[in-house]
Picture 1 (cartoon, rainbow, N blue to C red):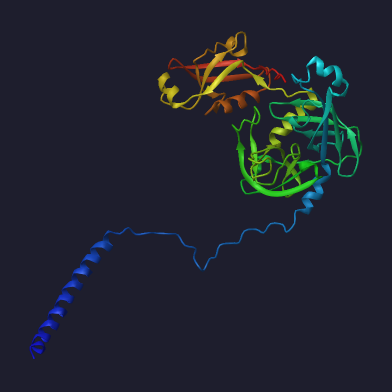
Picture 2 (tube, rainbow, N blue to C red):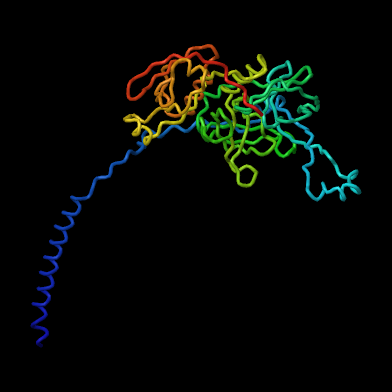
Length: 383
């Protein structure tokens, strides 16, 4: 009976309490909601669907038919002298076994190449044929011939050979400068000596440098499978045009791991032409040692802008010394081109024909300098 009297009041109290609690929660929620940021996103309108991407070809066999006949296998042989062993060189040992010990052995190597014209010129990598005593080239049509070295350029890792055959298939040069990341490319070569092989991928990056592969670097990076034996082979676009010469891979195992590099035809064409016409690559040279201007170096020179290069050394009687350039000078522009780093400067100087004038703009002890230097021919590197 007592409970019945208390229940109406108890129930009423609960209702009142819940009502007050609900009001508090709603007020608090409203306060919190007002503090939340508004998220805005762009959405595709249902009335205007995005246009589908243009479909690619179902097969790249047409491109392969155009380019593959001009891609060759390159086989090299060189004589290697046996290294001496203290035990073997012992007179007592040699007295009995000398006649059975080989002095020299033949070492073979393989790579790939590309026929560039009907005169029989074949483009390949310098490292494929370097130090070889004999070079043979095998065509896809079954013919083969011994090749002569026209010229080599170790600084770009390119070489040109010539074979005495007629009726040769030739590659068509494409525009490597128009390549974009994501473009489809095909690699053709002779990996591991198994025979001509085609792999497909995309352009992963362009303008790769500072890899330590060669002096002058401007590589196309691709994930098309490139393996030992592919060096010197063709990187082509879906039209069958040559856009690069396959040169190197990054690998922990020695096989393809999806990071391959090719020399673009924009560089290949220039070097190849110079080798055919002059027997060597011809580049400009100033006789200077340079290093990239870092923020620390800029601060030590009292320079606010840290983009440029520092002249670390000047060769006596060289072109730069004759023009008055001094160690410690800071160069910010070559002609009208900014030089953000030493490699950019090296490439700009190398592209200048010997005898041409190069304008150097920069600072000396905080004061502007402008010098005109006559480029000389870059000395050939020693093997």
